[in-house]
Image (cartoon, rainbow, N blue to C red; front, top):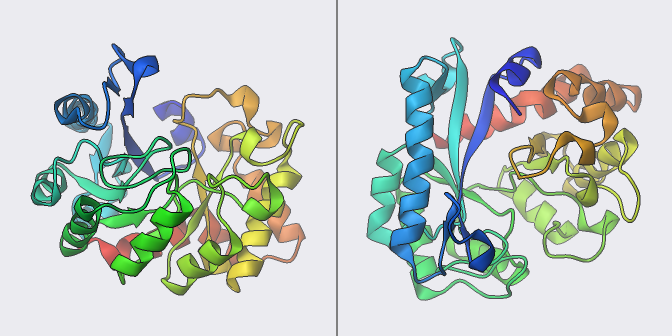
Length: 294
């Protein structure tokens, strides 16, 4: 996804990820580090990505959202920086450094877990370090992202914080294989109870089982999550189009940002109001950001 593509799709705000990956497959790559004990490697990889966003900001291409005023500015693309996997954070005391660098959302784990908790591909609960980090993130008003958490980790997160929890790029487990990468109905209800959102993931493998995904599959996930939550205010777009896959694995009708209107058009045909569709397009994310970013 390019800046030009986002502009053509009238995208005004995105969650800009800091993604780092442990293990042999990622070793030697700019985002790779050795293992969960390799804090220096994880930190170095994330700082390289921060530096890219900062250069884009200096070039006048984007605005990093650090304050409410940044969020409300509309002169250029706004980036809410999301750390996807918390290994770059050394410990709870280090969270303030990352807040100072612009991080406003944190997922404690990517698929393979972290020093702080398990992930959807590596079972585990919050560690004592993880519980301390959750409290530190709360003090900094950094939003919790539950995408990629294991079920046990999600449960522990919700037992440790009373604040908003979102799932930035997750779909409905009830419509897929029973993988912890997808949200259970109980998790959807808990996110809704806290006033959070679930961002629809457009990766075709996460929309349909054993066949190419379609626009109808995307609609089905959005509607299932809204029905379970009891509110369409939970509905949002997550895309995951920075996730290392190309447009060929996204439903054809939604492959590029300038096609996203097909989703709200389809929902309108199913009885969603203009306000409901505007909420999915941007309003529900903005509500969360406005409530959490001072």
